Amino acid sequence: MVEQSVTTARVSQRTTSAPRIGVLALQGDVREHFAALMHAGAEPVSVRRLAELESVDALVLPGGESTAISKLLEAFELLEPLRARLRAGMPAFGSCAGMILLASEVLDTRPDAQHLSGIDMTVRRNAFGRQVDSFETDLDFTGLDTPIRAVFIRAPWVERAGAGVEVLATVPSGPFAGRIVAAREGNVLATSFHPEVTGDLRVHDLFVEMVRAAA
Ligand code: GLN
Image (cartoon, rainbow, N blue to C red; front, side, top):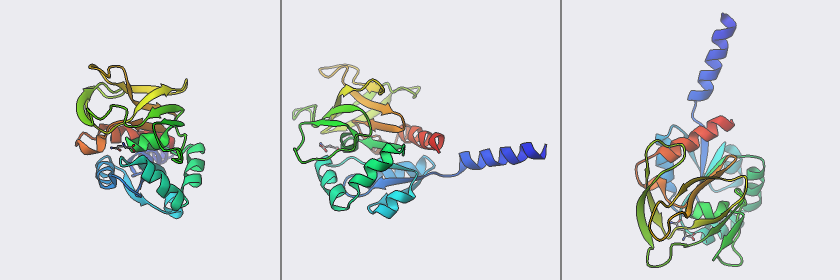
């Protein structure tokens, strides 16, 4: 009886405590992810230095400009440590530029841009073209009961998903129907769109759940 209540207390402590989730704060929409993570029950932490990266359970890579973030990752000497943590299984979520950074191959980028190979996928930058710089649509998203409003801003798509990659969402209709815009491999999640800007926090909820499950 005593044994059982001790076990129950331990489990509930683990599931209710807030995971420490870093937001890579070199460039991009860091504040929006901070707010979304807080609402989703996590403790967001700004990550710019190695010690900060080492202190977090998981990391969000925000939207912004992937080539700029790539340069800053090198300048702040975070590139190799971040690759190492991803190889070691740290959960990560990238939106838009963050998705590009998490890819194993990037098309239409600068030759000197770096990426992290967190997901075995080829991503094309600015894939939707100039005419459709930004758009919104409702998407079915695996794991969510109702469609999610997706905001795309000079967004990438996934042109190739590796065998171990779970496709979570595709564009439902129109000229880009079938294009992959959300994917997951292991503990790493990526979306072409920006769930941090809509007020619908279900993707962040899902990520926080992934982080808890990985702990
Ligand atoms: N087009 C940007 C890039 O290539 C991504 C845009 C975004 O994050 N909203 O990095």
